[in-house]
Image (cartoon, rainbow, N blue to C red; front, side, top):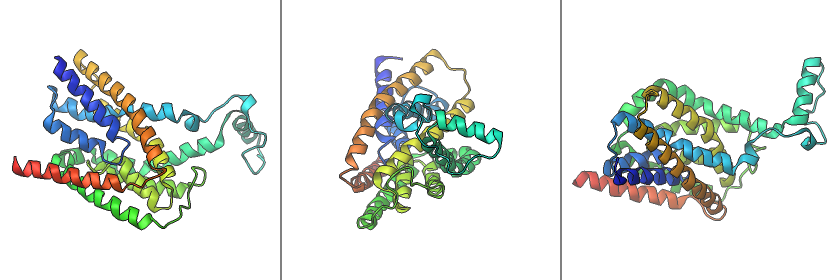
Length: 297
C-alpha cells in the first residue's frame, strides 16, 4: 500500500475514535466515509474492519475506567465489614464468602453482572439475524434515515427530560431491571446509523438515569458487546490475514484508541453542563446533507 492508503486508514481510525462514544453512530459514519474514501481492500475485509477497529476504542474505556471496572484487590484492601448481609450456613458458602470479603469488590462484581444482563437482548436478536441485517441495513440510505430519525428523537427526549429529576445517580442504584431495559434499547443500535451509545444513553435517560450514569454504563456495556461482535466478524472472515491486512487493522485500532481517550474525556466533561440536543441537530444536518448528495449525484 502507498502512503495515501495508510493515511486513509488513519482517517478511518479517527472517525471511529470520535464517533464511537459520541451519540452519532460510528458504524454509520464509517459506512458513509467508505462511500468517499475507499481503501483498496476487499469488501469482506472492510465489513470486518469496520467492526474490529472498535477494539481500539474499547481499550480506551478499559484504561480510563480501570479503577471502576477491576473487581479484585489484595487482602489488605478488604472492607472492614462484609458485603453480605446474611451469614453463610454451609462450609462451601462460607469459603466463597470469605474469599469475596478478602479479595473482591462486590459492588464492581454486581456491576459486571448488570452488564451481562444488559447484553442479553442484543445477543438474542443480533446473533441469529446478523447476516440478514448486514445484507439489508448496511447501506448509506438506512444510515441517513437513522441519523435523521434519532436526531429528532434526541431533541424530543431532551425537551421531555428537562424538568425531570433523575432517580438513578450512581451505578449502585442502577437495578438489574434497569440494566435489562437499557439492553433492550441497545437492540435498536443493530441498525447502522442509530448509534449504540446513542440508543443506550437515550434508554438510560428515559428510565430515569442521570446523563453521567447513562453514559458511563454505556461505555462499560460496550466492552463485552464489541469484543463479541469483533470475534464474530473475525471468525466469519477467517484468520488468514495478509501482512498488509494485519497492518491496516493494527494501525486503525491504535488510532481509534488514541482518539477515543480524548473523545471520552470530552463527552464526560460536556454532559456535566450540557444536554445532548447538539448531537441531535448534528445528526439531522448531516443526514440531510448526505441525503442531498446521493439524490443529486
